[in-house]
Image (cartoon, rainbow over all chains, first blue to last red; front, side):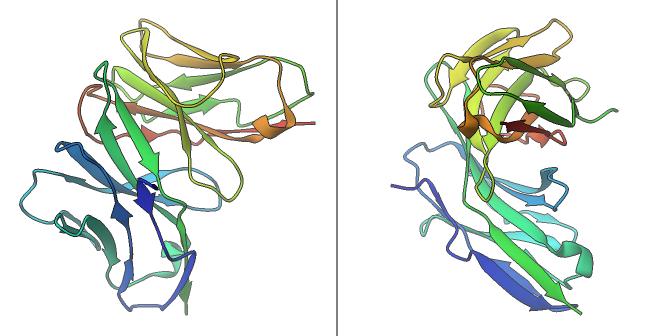
Length: 117
Length: 114
């Protein structure tokens, strides 16, 4: 089974509108973290937002918010007031502890977001 | 505070050769992870180093090896290069090895194997 599932290969959004990128995850570890990264065409992976499994409130960072629904195992990214510079690939990722104490991060397949003027 | 840096930016190698990629962690971070990102896919975990020792590994053969130095910089070595090794290689540093937490990525090294 996929640990991270992103079902939207591509999305379009009008400039200044809000958009939601979907992400579901699968883990049996009670302690895990969820991330969203942005990857522009240059290739650099830019950290956007982090949600810990024990965090009670949804994480927010500026125009980014993470809609964390633990029972449904979903961690959707909401981008408000889209800008042209938001056009990029977006990856959902999850970190889990493994035996030996290391943290492994598993990425989804990504969603390509294009913002239309 | 400096971010994560990687060198070189691009690299072209021939099948069968060996390659070394370098990563300098973000200041204060003692853990580094390496990822391989093939074209059109998400990054795949190769391994993680904490305090100069490998403490976790993904599904990659032994010809992928690494080092971490006392200053927390790191190297990824790939022996006997294959065409499928062509990818973007990303390193990420973090402060805590044993628990979930933020990882900060470098700009990557794009390796092409011909």
